[in-house]
Length: 328
Figure 1: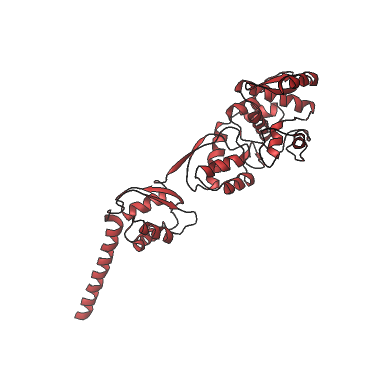
Figure 2: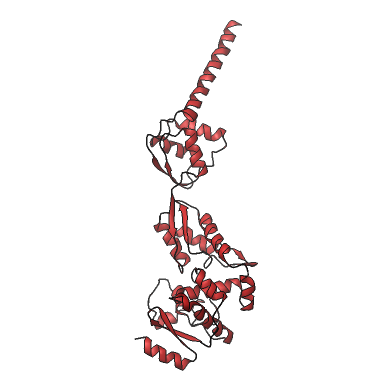
């Protein structure tokens, strides 16, 4: 009987020693890392891989106790992908807390200019170090949102241009949510009613705003250019907007050729009457307001005259005279 008691006491002593070792490693020892450490957690990386990397980088003293802590605290799958800056002298519990909450993620400021296409936005995100352009572009062109009860064809036109803060490795879904939420928050509450009075849907109104964004150079002319589009739509005239042809081409061109104007695409408004099937860019607030509140005028034509402005005309004869004057 005595040996059984001694054995039990020894077992309790071992368990106590293991518990003390675990508590010390996880909650007490804050000697690591000696200085701040930048760490990248790749998307799809397992907790074991993260723990091994932390051990190699000197952030934690023991990978097993780190994994055990994550398991017993239910945070095995809670570590977010991204780029982190871990401060000096963290306990393992502190490291896990920062990785699972995302609090130590290094954010990247990304500015998306007005008029960028979905492809350009995806490329800007990659150039800024957020993630893969291909991943973002595929998501932008395959996902959609519902606006005024209508599901959009994709997200072109609804990714609001602004400055955002993203962590490296931010998923396409999270980027989309941030940009479309900004669009919906800033879009006027009465936009749907206004669109109906203009005899267009919200998606069509955004398409008009996207053409204004790509064609206008100064804010004062945006409502006037929008008015030209509405005038031509009302008369059943083809819009003949160069920016829609540029969108249809595989690569952006500063000058269009006659062959470009003949490209067979539903976005070519020289060949197809009516609006293109989707927006051709992501308009800013000024262009959206211009599409919502177009300036009434008799104009059906415009041509760029230089100095950021256009010459407007009521008839084809007037327009041809402007073209001869301003297009050298």
